[in-house]
Image (cartoon, rainbow, N blue to C red; front, top):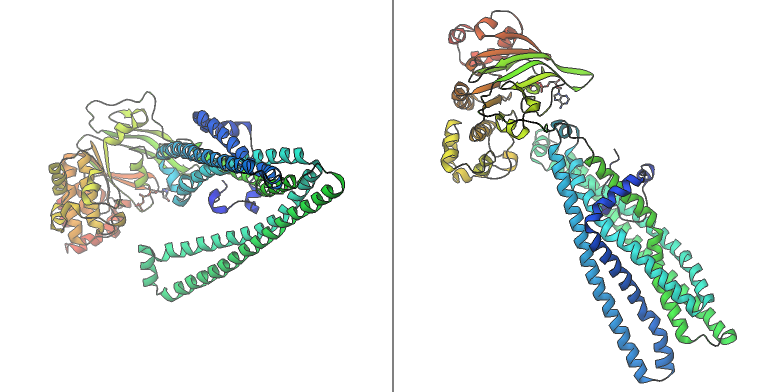
Length: 621
Ligand code: ATP
């Protein structure tokens, strides 16, 4: 997939090497598709075209009137005529400008509405994308599509489209008017204008390259700032004593930036000098040739005519220059649309079956029936997983890191679909159950708790917007977090900070348990954090989970012995296969994977409790 910043950032005029290499294929289908976005606004578009045509034509008219002002008013010494012509010129100009205002309003309106439609459609589409999409694509890339690429579309409509139309019309009218005045001078004009746009383009290119370089430099600086001034970045910098090195890196980038900025602004200066020098040669040539014609050959040609021709010539530089850029604008616009369409066309992996059912009285029986799963066909992650979890009971899944525990539970709310076998909810394949319903029945507390930057109450309400204050408090009491919350100066209105970073890992997890409790799902899935919490936090979490496990159908990915012991059955997964299952007291004696895990992982917990290894635990179980 070709990457690249949106049109706006690149400036106009020239294609980068990358853009040249990735020229999009313009097919009828592509054009038809672009057109389909414009179609709902065809009436407004037609009106815009009309406005552009009229205002371009009108804005040239005063130039044409200048000839009569000179010939009939000034040279003819007719004051009445002079005043009439001046008023007419002013009125025409005023009209052209008023129509121009209407045109730019309409244009902005259309562009904003089209991008509004595209943004919404894209957001909806992206929300349907599977977990796989979000783990594969970088967040920056997704955000670029949503923001600068769609913004590029707005620019295509407001700038490219308008400029093609108005410039072609201006040029056409100017040429017709020039030929009607005098064909020889008109021909000189046609030859001169493109010749003089060449040096302008050269100067423009230098400037454009500098702009690009400074954009890259700016990106680099932003990257440094993002990396070093973020919460985790700063921590890394401090812990590895990288302050001085990071400072020097930043200073060097900053230095490069100012050099570039100075060069860029001087190039701008040269650009203007070149422009004004070259553009004054054209009129001089017309005066000279026109003068020779009047004096020696063509007495019908007037001073006013020459003034009109010079004035029209001046109006042609801009449009010619813009039209020379059309190809670049065109390629860039097509690339932009192609890139956006690529995103729109990404298949929705997890779809709601059209005949999906909503179960009445959901119980929460879960069954894995010979389930296979892979992220990548080359590597099977889950191999023939089968187990049954009946209503009200609980299963603890244990196993070494990377064995496939999280993957297993992700299949239940269909974050991914199985590649073989089936996962059933109350006896029905989850792929045949209405997705919204299915997910409403499953409460998941993941290892990484995601809280958004808002108050505790807002974060809790995410689970259920209409939850009453009492329900919120009750859930927090059950999750063992209520006391902590009310001890805060702002209580439930305490801000949790960026991604909840103002809270500890244990507090966050208890908050997320409360959030799931508010949802009141039939099945609870709890992916216990592997990160070590202190024993007080741990026991608080444990107190929160224990009653849950007792009262609900639950699946626990357990890293702590106490959690495992609370479950009715233990399933041991290793390299994607169930290798052992049963009760703690039996498994611990088998001398297999569980015994090993028990020794290495849970042993520490036992040491912490200063109990003689095995015995009290076994007695507990
Ligand atoms: P842990 O206890 O460390 O959380 P786990 O048993 O939950 O581990 P999973 O997260 O299920 O393990 O991962 C199982 C395997 O699948 C791992 O080898 C991992 O590298 C791979 N894996 C996980 N997620 C993805 C993904 N989105 N794309 C590709 N491979 C993945």
